[in-house]
Amino acid sequence: MFPDTIATTEKLYGVRPPAIVGDYFPIIADFKNDATAQEKQAKRDLFERVFQTTHMNRNFTYARRGGSAPVRLDVFQPLQNHIDDVLRYNTLAAEVRDVQKIINHPVFKGAIKDTLGEQIYNQFPSWLSDFANPRKMLAHNIVDKAFQSLRHNVTMAALSYNTVVSILQGGSYTLTTKEIGEKWAAVGMLDLFHKGSFDFVDSRSVYMANRTSSFGNDRDMRDFLRAKQIKHLMKGGRTTEETMFLGITFIDMLTTKATWLGAYKKSMSEHGNELKAIDYADDIVELTQPQGSTEHLAAVMRQGQVLKAFTMFTSFFSVMHNQLISTMNELKYSKSHPIRSYANFVRSMMYVWVLPSIMATFVRSLGGADKERYLKDLASYPFLGLLIARDIVGAAAGGFSNLSTPVLSGLEELFLKTSRCKDPQKKVKHGVKGVALLSGRIPTKLIEALDGGYDYFTGETTDLRRFFISEWGIGGGETKDKRSQSNIIKF
Image (cartoon, rainbow, N blue to C red; front, side, top):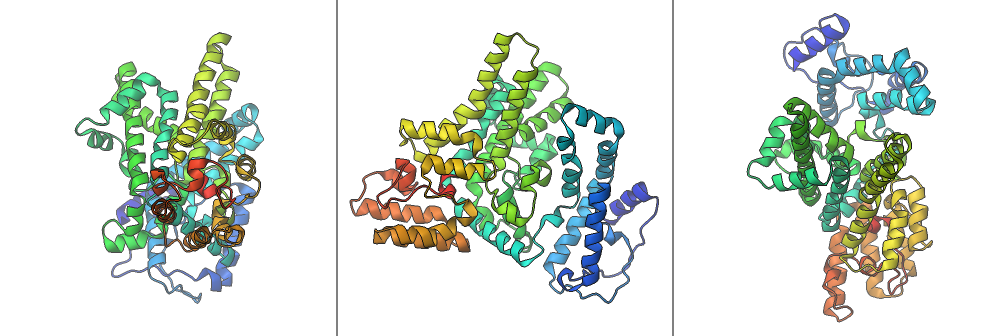
């Protein structure tokens, strides 16, 4: 990669980095034990806050001179960080510089502030900074590391082998339909099953070819698997953790490729320009499908590990909220006849709000929900991705005895639900489930299946759906041990 590093550095700074001949390994200072490194980081953070300037790490372009700072002795993390830095610098440094010039240009700044407001403009510098240096969002102290570990464990326990979440992943196709129309959404779905369709998409779109391999559809799943990146590199194949999420990634792959094909065919029919069609199809996928990469996340989802823990599993709802705002803006600024404008607004809201909510309730209950539950879920749906609001609204719909967020659900299961539960079997279930969520070692869906199987074979229930979803999921209300739904099950 060194020739690319030379080219990028000469383009940006007009100097040629020195070549190091022979064996090389990056020497990284131990940040926790190096006061000088901490002081430099504090100055860098202050500089960025004051001048709104984004810098990408390029320490590897300088000749190594040693030093007296304590050295980080673990092998894999410094090596992984070094590779990430080189890749990001070679491929993105010039682009980050150009985007920063645009953001700071008086014309752009004035246009955004005048039309959207200063608060909107202020999102751009922090967004670019987080995109250029995503590692600053990693855990740097004991509290951050504790929340990061807890978040990873909950992600693994809650999402692994989760067939319900896998099916729900396809619900975002309603957003595709809203954007490209019913005709082209149907064309994309039909073309998906033609021989060679996957290769057709991947051969034309770099973004689509890398989306599945980078697990780009959910922030928490992406962060968890990146933490296992070295294990993946050492093993050389698919890891156990990746296998646990195959259902989710497979449905996401089908949904996004059908979206891409439908958008591509629509653009080709209108313009006949393949390059424009590819760009349009990529844009539609980014606009309608959940994204987990830094550049697609709202500011509240890019913050430190503590805040990330309270915004778990909201990647899809971030897209949904953008679609809601877009739909309302279309109505507000439309120059069409009022009847046509309101007709388009109703159509869009059906695909953004009503249909996804109905489909999600149906899947989570496997068709067992009553009318009251459909109405409650419909009313709470727009709030499901909002910090704090989703917990309050969800609790109002399911009972105020539970206000926990997913990251705290393990503690809730282990202590609150086990203490409230009267049934010995359910008490054991809640205890094991709490341990599973806190440790990340046992899929919660396996625990629900065993609980349902026990009830089925002892005659407690005759409903075969209990092998796939919880007692609450079928009934949509309080179960016999008087517990209420937790957000982790609701998701």
